[in-house]
Length: 521
Image (cartoon, rainbow, N blue to C red; front, side, top):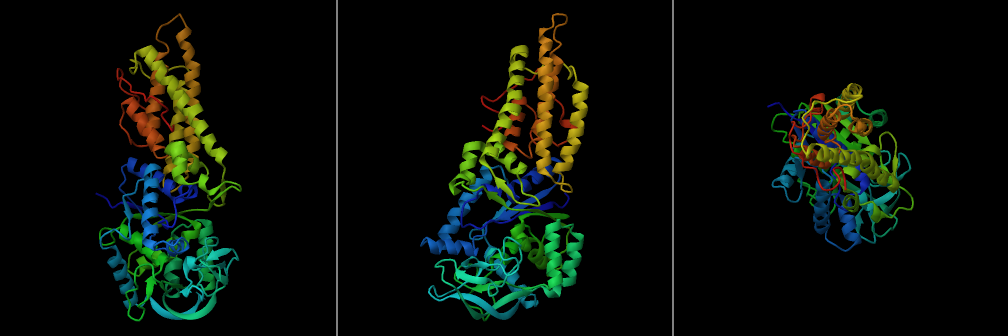
């Protein structure tokens, strides 16, 4: 068996539930690519985790007078349930507080890197809150990014994706009590990136980075690669396993990068290709720190990056109306998946408009489900609910078939890792459905011709062939409805996205259409 393609998605911090922006970012898109490659017979390893030790978890716990472990456990369960309901199926979700051996594995990696000199101590300024008597690192500190001026937490700016060291955060304040911070000298452990300058520059040059990520990496090289703090004086997280730092915890960004390696066993055969899905605000961890951890262990592998921008909520929409659980309950996974793929923020921010989500449901109801309902009704009325004894045909069938073949080529390109574009895939699928629906309307009039009997049956067979193909072609985007359609037609689910799928159920096969809509609900 060949070594798999390794696909990762950013581990979310467990300080809150998933909202629609998370689904529009890395998760649904990565699942689409995974499903497509598996249908093609490729071996795939699809992994993520939950960032239970993120500083934002502790901040939420402090604000609500709860224990951090309670916050992490509660939201981890909610996040994994939302993934399941949205059809995002991981091979491994790393659970930092539950996976056996995880904590020791991360600490052992940290210790090895320290012994190799990859991690070294430095003394720098770090914000401190005197009323709270707490060092302010990560989400504990708020202020303005020293690089772009945007609102930022300590450690990483999610706007420009450049790191800050906490002490250079402009107008730093405590995230819990909002008191202005004072700067104090603090001895911490760092990964100096400058020794990796040439290796990283070569790696980035061959990785085919998206333009904005390439600009970030080139700017880091131009300005001088920074030292990245990988430990902090704190109470929450994995203890730093280095003598002299008894009250320090491992940084969340370091742990998130290490989590990917734990999710993929680096002691076994290396993947032939790694594809990382992340938001731009998290790209430093994926494109800088993770490669350093790999390079420090002499692990080299081809890597690609699918980076999305932010999917922001339109002004006036209440926060409670954008949670993944609520939208999945109201619209279902098919509708929500196709919507977030259409609205996926590539190269620029996009805005969530609830009426566009409602429009996605209308498209499924008025185009996809309407055509399928007419088709199943015609088979029931004309053929007793069985696939007709006829070859695909009808007026315009040869033209439609050629268009569908061209459409499959477009689909394969849009689904494939080299030109991945799920928004294009949705558009191609919609055009296919509109074309076959028109074909069905035109050929329905064959039943009214008295000159020849059964002229309408080849058109029904043709439409059943297209429906069968769509159960394969649409499955990466809408797996729930696609599998429902395959079951209705008594054909195999999860077939390859190619023109061979354009084969209807065997003549005489009794169809089992669902009582409700095929796609969505």
